[in-house]
Amino acid sequence: MVLDSLSAEGERCCRQLLRETTARFRARPAAAAVLVPLCLVRGVPALLYTLRSSRLAGRHKGDVSFPGGKCDPADQDVVHTALRETQEELGLAVPKEHVWGVMRPVYDRAKASVVPVLASVGQLDLQSLKPNPEEVEEVFVLPLAHLLQTQNQGYTHFCHRGHFSYTLPVFLHGPHRVWGLTAVITEFALQLLAPDTYRSHLVCLRGIESLS
Image (cartoon, rainbow, N blue to C red; front, side, top):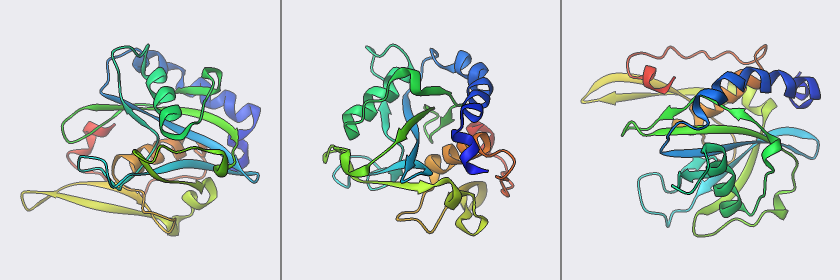
């Protein structure tokens, strides 16, 4: 059951599974960190996403992402980065004790590491958030039940110099398409939160090993 992931036992199991990863990557230098916010919206378990502002510089403007950003030298660790960036972007203060753990990092095209941090933010009213318009164009949620339906799961093939290179997951039929590293992190989260339900049907070839 999807709700089991938000039960006390589900949280305990997730924290235990993440304990080793957290110990390995929490204090390890990283380029960026994102928060993967697990929430309840009108009693429905969901993940919270942002749509990056189209006014931002760089190739990722207008993309779906999790709240987060570059690590600052003053940040204590990647958890601090993820929580700080979430508050700056959304006005959402997440206590450290609500963090379940650190997930394994993913790497962008420049091989810079992005560390996902899983946290439960509890009951959430999207109207209470105060997104920074300079960074965030929209905030939305996707229920876990939606993400777990096979008809909402797909894949994207990437080519390099005219040849197939690798395949990444994509999640469809929500307000916006979830793809790229955000989709990879979403898949990591589903494998953790719903191990008996979610089965990746992707066959990832060369190049994808850098993301695991």
